Image 1 (cartoon, rainbow, N blue to C red):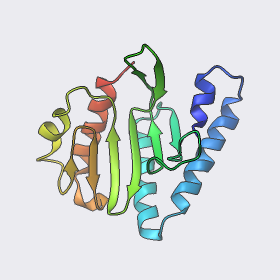
Image 2: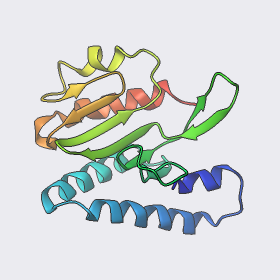
Image 3: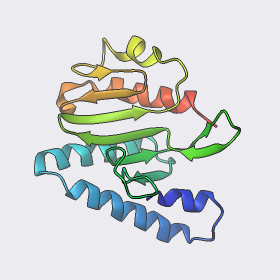
Length: 161
């Protein structure tokens, strides 16, 4: 379910109702976790909303159009356009967060240079695994939040549509 997509496809939907539905979906997702992980995810979610106050919110439940689970659910922030080889485009988020079995993943979507994140932030962020588009860590206390902020802001800047 991708509620923001309804708005982007120009269907007439009251924005306030849409925002309320996304907020409810996000809160339901966060409420699924044990207290410690829920607290970390809520803290990170609130932190990113403060860092990106004008970024539209997204929620992806991790299921494809047939209802098959294809990924972990994601909370997304911002807008970017994916351009496919066949000329089609798709709206998507710039930054995403997701809980995983060992902690939290922060996705910085759309950076063309897959070495940028690991080379720029991998050695300074703290105890995290940094790939071409993902920063994965066990707990917020394991990372330097100001370095995560810079990675997020760099990713948003590099993927402006």
